[in-house]
Length: 215
Image 1 (spheres, helix red, strand yellow):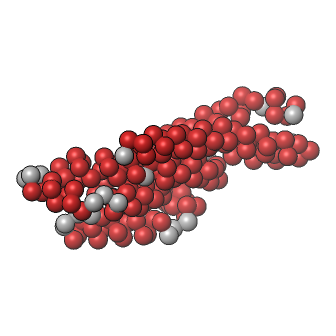
Image 2 (tube, one colour):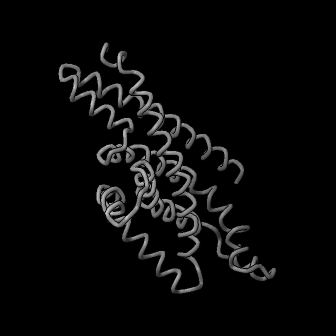
Image 3 (cartoon, one colour):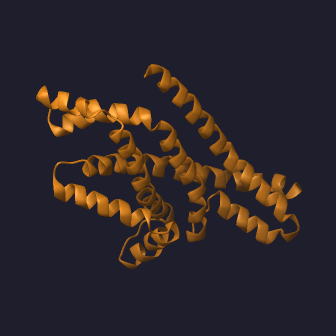
């Protein structure tokens, strides 16, 4: 445990990087995923097709390959973004299809009559989606969306292999430097991850009960 205590600042720095990756990429994935979900149900076939291809392509591509493209190929093409922001782009792109599919499942749970009633009142597609459909869909899929964020928390560890000093990357460096304390080092890393994921799981359960009562 002396290794963990002596290197606590390094752990906290890596924890801060992991939180930053989670918050920024999570917000980006939520925005992009919402747009993609709207495109999937769009009456314009071209938009629906583009969204479907985007979703299937990224959902079936390994995260390592996505981050490799962002961290290695983008700089080769002339990008001067820091590796941290390359990781943000990769994590956002990889996570957004899962957000979109979770939202689409919520959209499918909204009664068709709701959209028909909105159209009968003269609302356009954008107004129907933003005012009538999405508010109900988001309530239905809060637990799945939080599960996506939990998965994103664990996926941030892959960024450690691409020059981002997040929590797992710090743990790997410390484990290599302290071979006699590998178990303690990795247990500390796991503890920091649990500090994020357990509250998210509790939040998902409470929000599910709250909105279930409201419905």
